[in-house]
Image (cartoon, rainbow, N blue to C red; front, side, top):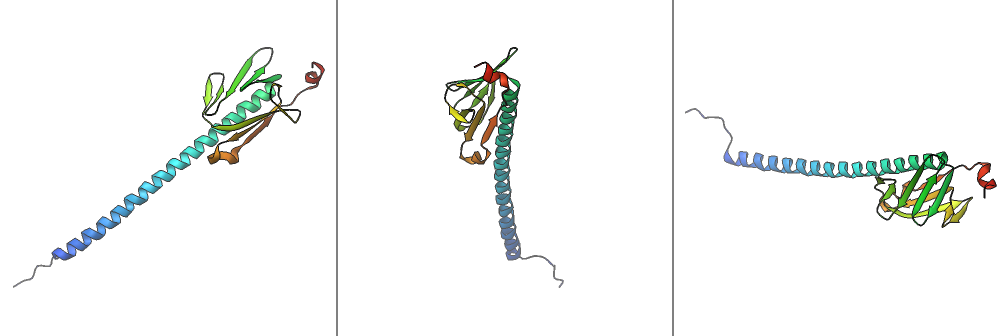
Length: 150
């Protein structure tokens, strides 16, 4: 009688159990990688928002001749145009554009002194914990006419 070479039922069950363990580990690793990718994407989005805010604030401080603070509103004015910023707890609004950053505090300066109202020439913004290392300090240059017109 010829024996047919085949796997026994026990051998097939052992292979299936090992395959199930390997596949479940693969799905677990895939899930962990997807979570890490989403965290990295959120971090990149936050950094891009901070860089965008830094660029527009730097441009506004240095293009407009006049920056004035009134409450949580920051106004940049020139003879031709004006821009306003509203700094709230959950969002920063530039005219009608919104920048989704949570600012813990914003400190305004004039000639190195903290300023609560009126003319300003610099701003320091502290952000919420996950991106606190990305605090901003932006200043504008003033010409002699600023001091002559006071």
